Length: 89
Image: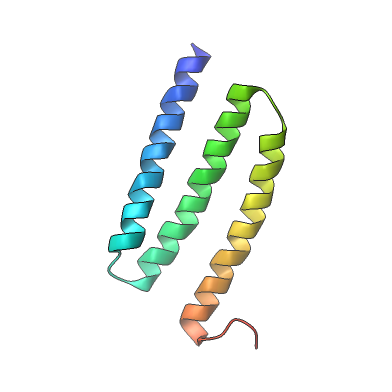
């Protein structure tokens, strides 16, 4: 029963990832693209955690933590680039 729930959750987050890719390519504004990238990072983290639960290993949890830190920093850097035109002052 847990396996079916994991596959359902993997499918839902995979569909959400595809919707984010569509929003990145067809987004009407840069702010929409930034939000789609941030949401895509969250979907990738959730997919990695679910895959780690399915495989029964802890390495995917550590990798998801690294992706979370890099995703946050990249979102902030991209927002600063859009707002100011440069990242480093």
